[in-house]
Length: 336
Image (tube, rainbow, N blue to C red; front, side, top):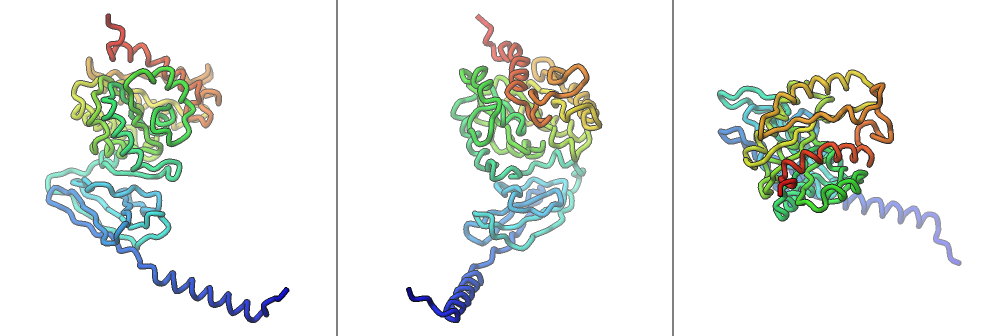
C-alpha cells in the first residue's frame, strides 16, 4: 500500500484551508437593514440582500437568531428604540446591527410595552412562530371557528392543530373539542404584546366566533407590573371585540404557578383582581379556577403541573371540566 509523504499531506491540508477561507471571503455579507418612519409613527424596515430575514426588537434587546421576524410595518406612535439585524434563512449569518431611537408622534403619550404589538420567535426551533401564525390564521378562517382559544404555551400545549409541539392535553382536547368548530391560537413564549400583534394581523378575522377563551399574561409577570398586564389584557379584549363584535369572551384568571405560595403567586393574585374588573354582562365572563389546581396547603402537585407552570393531562382535564358548562351555554348547545 502506498502512503503519501507527510509533506504532501500537510501541503494538501494547507491548500484546503486556504480554499475554505477564500470561499468564506467570497460569501457576500448581509446588508444592514434600514428604516423609514411615516407621520403616524409606523416604521418600515427594508434590507436589499435577497432572501434575508430581518429580525428586530423594540424592548432594547439585541435581535438574535430567535428574535422576532419582521413581517409587517411596526406600529410605534409612542416612540422607542428599534434594533434590527438581517439573517440568512438558516440563521447562521447575520448583518451588523441597525439601531435607531424614534420620538413619540406629537400628542401621543408613552405606552407600556404590553401595548406595543411586536413579533417573537423565542421558542424556535421547537416551533416557528411566523409559520404557526400563518397556519392558525388559515385554520380559523377555513373552519369559520365558533370557538377560539387564545393564549401562550399553556394554551398551545392543550391541543388542536397544528401539532407543532408537545401537547400533554391532546386527548382531553379531542374529547371536549374535536366535534366543535374550534381553533387554538396559543403560542409558546408569547407576551401580551405578541398576542396583540397576532390579532391585529388577521388571526381572528376569518373566524365566526361565538366564544373566545383567553388565558394570557403569565409570561409578562416576570417583567411587567399587574397594572401593565391588565392594560395589555384590556387592549386584547378591545381588539377581539373590534374583530368579532358578536363574541363572548371567557377571560380566565392567570393560573397559579410555582410549587408553593410565593411573591409571584401574590403578584398574579393582584393581577387577577384587576382582570376581574373587565367582566361585563353578555360580553366578558371572568373565571378564576386557580384553586382547582392547588392542594389544601396551597402547593401544586406535579401530577397537575409537571413543571409547576404547564398543566399535565390531569391539569387540562380540570380546565376543560371547569369551563364546559359555560361553553355549552354560551355556544347555545343546550338549547332545544
